[in-house]
Length: 322
Image 1 (spheres, rainbow, N blue to C red):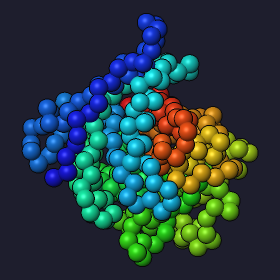
Image 2: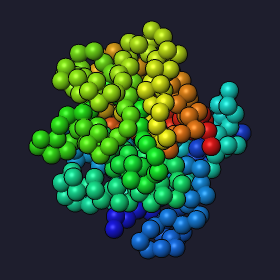
Image 3: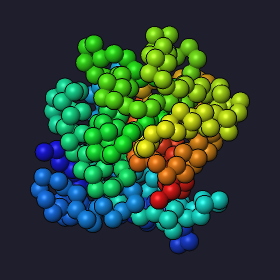
Image 4: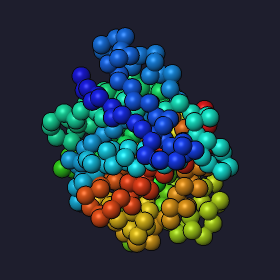
């Protein structure tokens, strides 16, 4: 069975005694310490948390530049210093209890083997009512992260993908970071919408595939022109499903805001647009999971992308209804 590594210790990075940061409120929790059944490493203690961070340090499926395996560590480091106060929604800790169960230990093998092993490890989280926040890792991880929800949860599942790309290539040479939504539609994904897609960044065949599956594409331009209409269109696309999963590929942001990704491109969302979008999506009571993928710290000087990813998690949690 795939194991979870020991979670890192969380502590505030602020010297101001009035500051409360995510480093103060996230609790490192070992699954082994709460295990009641060796075949299902999720005890009652972990299921009592409102959200659980899960690291997935893997980038073996990246089509472009690698580096996302270092994403979980960098996102945690950035999130520890993020303050918990939201002006409109109040402090996150007043509404949420958050645990970190560490990184999944990635087994050796091909991409399909890794996806299968991760899904087996993740499925008990959904079965016990845990709402996971996955720290990736490359976009191939969407397959186990959503596939586990499809297997474990009763009813239908849809995905809102915040991404510059459609990621629905047919895996003729095996799965990759470009094939997750082809794979998930083969698994019976019930609804799919992409928000932030870029003109001239995808093939007509892939746009056609999304259309054939009854999916919806909301371009980055559409978000910039009319934010409220874009959000409404995205939510309407998943209005008939029982459960919604949100996937954030950091390349949905403009390259100036997120240079540390496998495929940075101009014309993307601003951080302000992304954070407002996540606040709205978090208010969805059907939201069962969230992932941040394609944050690749080695591909930039500094920490701009991981900083943006950490604050994306904060905004999502501040809006996520219980």
